Image (tube, rainbow, N blue to C red; front, side, top):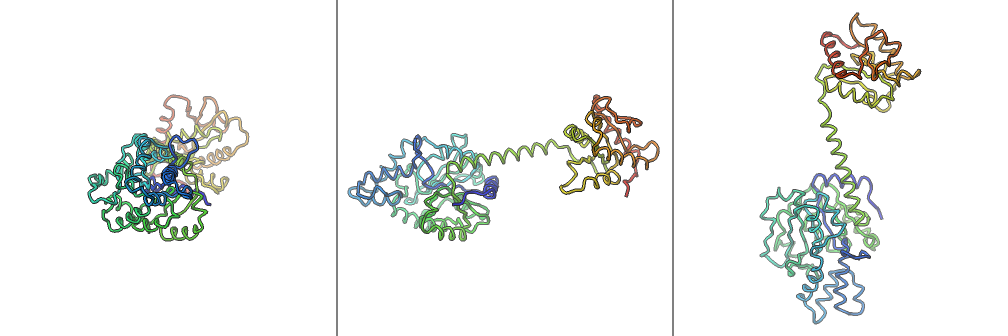
Length: 454
C-alpha cells in the first residue's frame, strides 16, 4: 500500500491553490460524532438497518446499498419505512461535525461533492466562518429547483462560499435519498438521461479539463463507480487526480485490475493514508505553503526597486562575522541607486572563489567599499586581506583624486594599517549611509565616461 510522496503533496497543494481541485467525499470517511471508538458513521447506519431486519447472516452486511435492499425486500418493511429510519438516524447529528471535516473546511475548496446524506461538511464550513451554498440531486423529481442555477458561477468559485453538493440526495426530502441497490440503478439511469440533469455549474466543473479530483474514501472497489465517473465526465483530464482509499480497497482481489483501469482511463492515482490524519496533514502543509509564499511576497515588497541603468557597482569587502550588518548596508545602498556585489548574493554554487573575486575587483565593479570592524582588525589571516590588496593594486591605475577604494568603519577607531592613508567613512554616525551613497554617486557623475577594465 503506497502512501503519499512529496511529489503527491506538492501537486495536490498546487491544484488547491489554483482553485482547480474538486473534493469528493465517500461514505466511509466520517466517524460518528462523540464516539469514543471512532466508529464509521455509515457503518453505524448500516447496523441500525440490519438490526431492524434481524435475519441470520445479515448482521455481516457492511454495504449501505445492500443493507437497504435487504430491508425494503423484507416484509413488512417498505421504502417509506427506510426513509423514516435513515432520517431518524441522521436527526440527532443535524448540527454536528467532526475534526476531519473541520480540517477540510479550512482548505479553500470551491466545490465539494458528498456521497453521503450527512451535513458534517456543511456544518464545518459554517463553523470556520464560511458561507457555503448547499444543494442535492433528486433522482425522482423534475420539480426540484437547484439554488445553483440562480447564482452567478463566478460567485460560486469563491472559497469563502464553497458549494456542498449531496450527490445521493438529502434528508431534507427523503424521497431523494439513493439508498438501495434498486435506487442506485435508477439513479444512474436518471443521471445518464439527464432526467433530471445535474446543475450546469456542477457539470461544467466536472468536465473542465484543468480540474483534478481528490477522492476521500469514495469506494472505487464498487462496480458502479466506473459508470458514475464516466457519466460525470471525471476522466481524460490534463492533470492526475488522487484517491485516498482504505485497506479494504488495497486488499480487494481485483485491486490490480481496478488500479490499472482507473489510472489509465481516468488518471487517478491511488494512495493509502488514514483519512483523519490525511486531512490534518493536508491542512498543515497547505498553511505552511501559504505562510512561505506570504513571507516571500512581503520580502519582495520590502525589496527596493533596482538601481537605474548605468548605476555604479560597489564591491562590499568585509569580514564574514559582520555578514548580517553588511547585508543590511548593501540593502540601504541599493535603495539609494547603487548596485551591490556581495559574495553571498553573487557567487553561484561551484564558483572558484580565489579566482573569481580578484577578477571581479579588477574588471566588474566601479568601487570597492572595505567595511572595517573590530572583527576584521583582529583577524591576521582571512581572504578579505587578498581582496583589499587587489583593490589597492587597481587603485594605482586611477588618476590622482579619483576614488576607487573607499574605507568605512562599522565602529569608530577600527582602522586597518594599510588603509589609514585614505579617508574613512564612520558608519556609526547619523546619516552616514546617506552621505556615503551621495559621495559615491557624486564621484560617479563626475567620472562620466569611465569604463571598467576590459
